[in-house]
Amino acid sequence: MPRHLRPVIAAALSGGALLIAAGAGAAATQSSPEPLVIAVEGPQSGGQASNGLDQLRGVQLAVRQVNAHGGVLGRPVQIVKADDRGSAARAKAVARRVVAQGIGFVIGPYNSSVGLQNLSLYRQNRVLPLWMTSSDETKGAGATVQPMNSQIAPIEQRYLSSLPARRVTMLVDDTPNGAFTEGMARRLRTALEDVGTTVDWIPVVEGAPSAYYVGKTNEALATKPDLVYVSTYFPEGVQIARALAAAGTASPCLMGLANVDNGFVAETTLPEAQRCVFSGVPAAGQMPSARGYVQQYRRAFDKRPGVWGSFTYDSARTLFAAVERAGSTEFGAVYKALRAIRNRQGATGPITIDPDTGYRTNVPVSILTVNAKHKFVIARSS
View 1 (cartoon, rainbow, N blue to C red):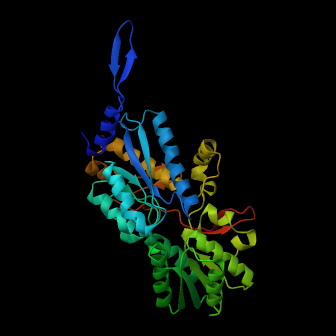
View 2 (view 1 turned 180 degrees about the horizontal axis):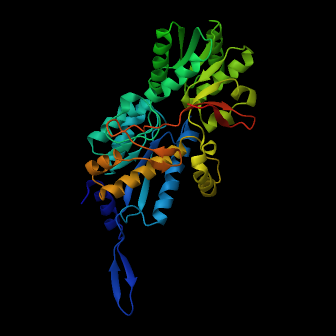
View 3 (view 1 turned 90 degrees about the vertical axis):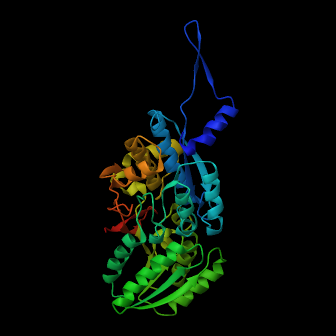
C-alpha cells in the first residue's frame, strides 16, 4: 500500500466509511476508492493572501474537473490546505505537518524564501513538489510550470538595454522573506554593471508604515536615476508606487514580477498603477490559451482570476497527467513521468518540462503595463 494513503485509509476505517449498498433482494458491500490526497502550499492568509487564495482556487478547479471524470487512476482527489503566510519562519512547520499526514504530492510553495527552507524537507520525505518558487536555488526533484529567476532576468535585461539608463537605483526587499526579490535584483545588478551601468541598492523591509516607503522612495530619487527598479512583493510595491506618483518625477520605473498581483491593482489608483511597467506573466484573462479556464473559474468562484491561479491549475493538471502516465502514485515513477512531459497544452500555453532541470522550457514572460481598465496587459512581448 502506498505510504501516503495509509493515514487516509486509517481515518476512513475508524470513521466507519464502509458503504452498504442495496442489491436486488440482497445486501452487498462496496468500499469507496482510496482518495489521492495532495497539499497546496502558499500564502493563503496574511499580506499576500489574494495571491495565495487565487493559487488555491486554481487547484480546486482542476480537482473539481478531474473528479467529475472519475478522478486519477480511478481515485477521487482531495486537497489539504497548507497555509505558510509567505513566511520563511513558518516554512518547516508547514512542511512537517504535510509530511506527517502521509501526503505524497504538494503544489507549492510560492515564496522562494519559504521554498529554500522546506522544499528539501519535502524531497527528503518523498513528497514530490510541483514548486511555485522562482529562485534557482529551490530546484530539485519534481517540476515547475512557472518561470525561474534565470528565465525572467534576461527579459528585464533586454528591456533595460532598450532604454538610455546609465544609472539605475534599486529598491529591494532583501529581508529573510525576500529570497526571490533579492535574487532577481542581484542578477540584474550584475548584468547592468557588466555593461558599465551604475547601480545603487537601497534595501526595504516588509510591513512598514507608509512614511517609511515615502522616505525610501525619496532616497532613491535623490540619486537622480535614469530608472528606478523595484524588487519587492506587491504590498510594498503598492506603497512605493504611491510614493513615486506623489513625487511627480519623470524617472521611468520597472517593478519585478512579485508585484504582478490583483492585490496591487486593487489597492492603487490608476495613475499610481501606471507609474511603472512590470516584468512578469499576464493575468489569465490576457492569455488566449486561458480563455476556457477564465470562464470556468468565474463560474466556479464568481471572481476574476489572478495571475498565479492559472499556473497552479496547470500544475495540478500536469501532476494528474504524470500520475496517469506512470500508472502509479510512487514517488520515483511520477517524478520520471513529470520530467517526460512534452508539449502539453495548458491554460498558460504549451508546457514542456526540461528532463534535466524540471523547469518549463517555454515560459510566458513579458513586460507588462496597467491599462485604462486597471488590468495588467502585455506591453512588450518576450
